[in-house]
Amino acid sequence: MPLVFILQEFIEDCLNQIAPGVNLEKVVLEPAKNPDHGDLASNAAMVCSKALGMAPRDLAQKLIEKILKNEFITNAEIAGPGFINLKLHPTILHNELSKILVSNGKYGNSNIGLGKSAQVEYVSTNPTGPMHIGHGRNAVLGDTIANLLEKVGYEVTREYYVNDAGGQTIALGRSAYVRYTQALGKTISDADFDDDMYKGDYLISVGEKLAQKYGDSLLNQPESQWFETVRLFAIDAMMDYIRADLKFLGIVMEYAFESTITKEGWVDKALKLLETKGDVYQGLLEKPKGHQVDDWEERPQILFKATSYGDDIDRALQKSDGTWTYFAGDVGYHYHKIRRNFDLLINILGFDHVGYVKRLTSAVKALKADLPYIIKTCQMVNFVDDGKPLRMSKRSGNFITIDQLVERVGKDAVRYMMVSRHQDMVIDFDFNQVVDQSKDNPLFYIQYAHARIHSVLRHAAQVFTDDDFAKNASLECLVDESELDLIKCLIQWPRVVASAAQHLEPHRVANYLYDLAGTFHSLWNKGKEHTQLRFIDEKSPKQTAARIVLLQSTALIIAEGLNVLGVTPLEEMR
Image (cartoon, rainbow, N blue to C red; front, top):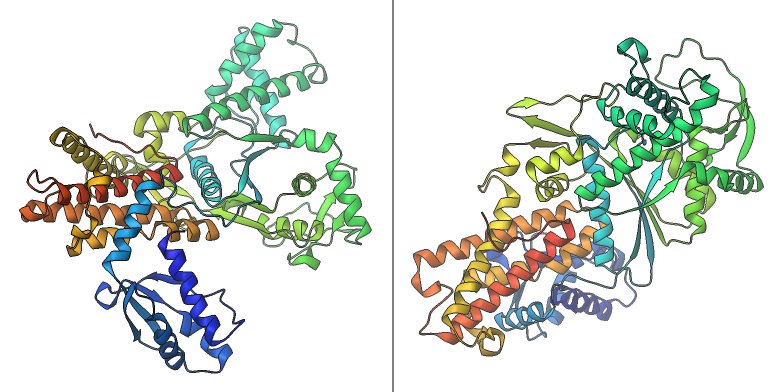
């Protein structure tokens, strides 16, 4: 077990000795805010004192008396209103360094989700065109969250819900037919496209393929004769685009189709369950709030009692003409998820879908109240090229596709940038900055640290004939403050992974890697100024071996973190 978890359990055990059964849920052990005050800090006394009827500093003093019995903790002090700062013995840091080296890139793994399954739904854009760069954040965020959950033991299903039965695919089918007529020689113009149709050039190839397959057999036929054939053909073509786009980002998923969900009766099954619970009724849908709808008229519909589960209004499931609403399809799909017995459901939505959070959450509560269901919405990405903002529209065909983005800046830059900030924060994606080779580009800074380390490792292998550095190392030689700071940063990795997975916040990993790279670069620069700190010293093989072990461990953690983000660790920089 990693040291941070051992120490966390130790603190909790000390608390239990003072007050058996006390709630430990909010107890944390994390790096001290001021390194001069200690290596780690705990809020144990602060969060447990009220339940015990004690002043935080009094409880902290009792805890310190027990904590100091641990031989690896050299000092424990009360800070502020009751925080506890701990100082670790260098020996325990050296011991932990050995664990990292033999972890084979799995030091951050844990069993938090062992034996549990999770389904992560993400992307789920309408299949009406290739993925444009605005979809990239949702795709990368969802995929990285899936990586994190796997890192802590979950069995994860990555899934894309394809709305292949919605009104937008009707517009797609008609747009593809226009391109089909063009492929057969008809001159077309903007007048051939209604406002809701798709004018993008990406449909030209679809029209050409339709012409190759069907010749002119669909030409001059009533829409009822060709429409479904063309619509389904176009959807398949768009899904081929989307799968290819996701592959450019290193993403492979499973797909659930709305048409299949409906055909298999999942909407009916969900509605029947809600009926047995008394959660559906025939009623009049209220006029949408906050929207001016001039031709609104009340009409009887089958409604779901969403307000009973935290929503603002009840939601329509079936229209007066007997067809399902868009929301009904979502209810059926989520019931399909539930019946597959996942232990955790996660849904990644774009910020423009924030209004769906309450209605989806209410539906899942009604269908299975005790199932954990988490929705994450990710903010927009502002793309800037040569100082100018980019404006895009899928309907007009004016957009940059994912494959074009990856071709220009690389998969790794895209993936890192899309999770570099909390999902509630807007990201400014500057094409020039993400390829800049300086500290201002976080990914370069991290990759440069990894490549620098491997440069030293290659040099060490040339200098020393026996390259089993772990066997020859005397880790107690690592006593300089900068070396110990690097070890202290390394041992935080399991805690970072656990907290990032618990909160579904991959930016914590990105931020940690940047800090780790900075700590390494500081040690590198200090070695340039002080020759006794240089990594390779032919006259001191044991000292060199110890520092090589430190570098090998650092490279392992950087690579492990980048793999979680779906970024390739580089051993050389061009």
